[in-house]
Length: 119
Length: 119
Image (cartoon, rainbow over all chains, first blue to last red; front, side, top):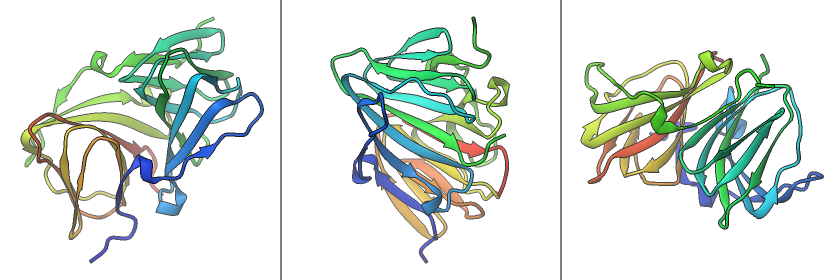
């Protein structure tokens, strides 16, 4: 019997989409687990940022839960900046401007999960 | 200014706790991002299962969103079984019996995220 919604796939099998938003440079995203999988509470995305690339500083009313898979980054949140590499777990609270910058020589790859509902 | 809740730490800095539940063998968990971090919607945990170890088959009313970091596993969900290794993303829907088994020679390490609210 096939269980509706059960899936196990390598992340590279999920299509990568270039992030075209203003201020994003060298960033692509794969939506790994979404509402389409019947995931009602939160989504798992995988971001890749090329060396020299970065996301634009932006603010929204939901949090990020992040895990760095490869590469090195500077992550800015409000007036704080932290460096992070593989194995780092990062929490970015809601309503604070933030961005990620690849400060290494290889692709920065990280999981970034967001809720479907705001608290 | 320190931003309340912003954190970036290596996962090894978070205390590992042995999972003592019946049927769990060689399993430990680190709660990486939780309500204590002001994460109101979902929690990020990192599980490690020794070679030969496994979680017990169990069922609950919430989903799992999983990403395999290291090692190889057999993941069972209902009557289905799939093999997964590093880079695999796995969705386990609510209310289906499931378990993970380390089928490799190294530690199986994976992220497993769960909602704080059920749909």
